[in-house]
Length: 217
Length: 148
Image (cartoon, each protein chain N blue to C red):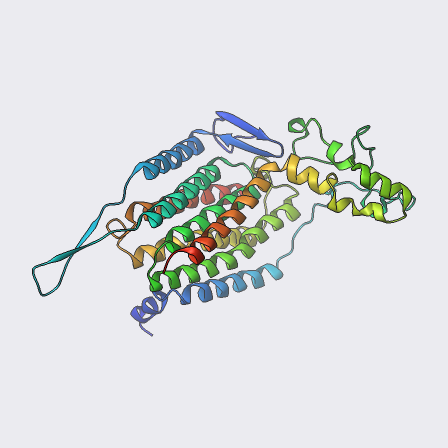
């Protein structure tokens, strides 16, 4: 079994799915886990807005139910991201990415504002479309290479179109992040600490996707 | 069209799935003209035996006595490989013995190659699939039940 170009620290054998730890994947895994713990313990700050035209201000607070829901989704997203960091199986990775993606949409959809919910609906549509290229790529890898295990795929080349399909699928699943960053003030908006989880998971998954693409080609 | 107009069009969330779907269609069209090699030797082995009461689904073995004929990526990680494939519930065994074709309902009973994959060789996938489904229902129920 190959450590994908690095020294292997350990393997977690779950039947055909073999999770593996190398210095890179272990670092990414610990980053995801650590950030999830910080996220679970942190509390959102209260936003104070000045009222225009008079000497006053108003506080906008998130209701407790919304905080709890967002925190739950952020934890699920963090766990899914951590799993995606160490998995050694391309179909398993696709499932972890899908789980992170649906938790991302959950974080956005917790809001009560109609325009945010409209946007979340569109992201959900993107997520559903992305299922086709993502799992289609995994199926094509299985058909052309005969295996889903990244340890074996390291020595087998697959078609470039499959890699492009895979990238497209991952982009669709985690594509919420850049659009949502443009929409909301990332760090100070309502529900702020949990929104950052979307971005952390996106960055980590993109790093991992690059590694998998290198393995495929 | 100026680049600013393009960015403004993109800032509308309704454009995102449309643009993405167009990109997917483009790559899929590219994929149609590509040739692929096919690894048929990695399939799960199966011998068709018309005499068997489990005919199209028979993969060898006897329930609790000998394992069926299955492949795994890492057989060393699955020491009990094949036992789930060969398993039949008492009801299915009875159906297979008494009737000609009802034994094939093994697909809806515990045992068989699908259960072998789902719950043994690729068990983590099953956990994740159900987790994704659960998250989808959690989000949907949150949207429906929250007040106002």
